[in-house]
Length: 124
Image (cartoon, rainbow, N blue to C red; front, side):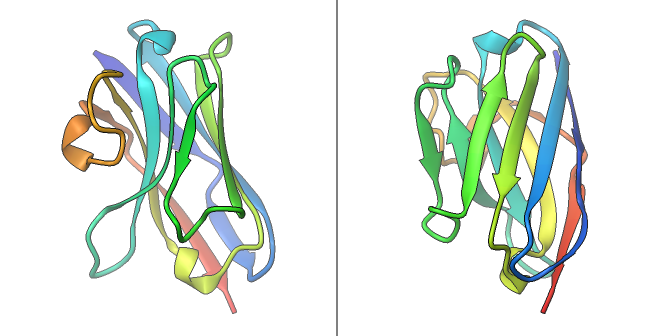
């Protein structure tokens, strides 16, 4: 079992920056590839960013590429999502998730463990 807890969400204005954290406990953090997803009201949950076990490889949705940066600190069992130049369409509940490295990084079904989510609201 892996427990995940997101933090860092809040209300910001368009153009601002925000950093989300995902603290984990349970099984060895470095055994898992990780991802961030988000779900806006009335919409399906969507992939935002993913990162390999050692942090070398990162992946982004086109909508956030160049604005968001995913990273992880295996010594702290924590993953991060640095969000910049935020837009109102970034408003959503953001979730962190863990998956075995051999599974598809973009697919929600690949992820075995999920956090409870943190709300991010961007005002125009």
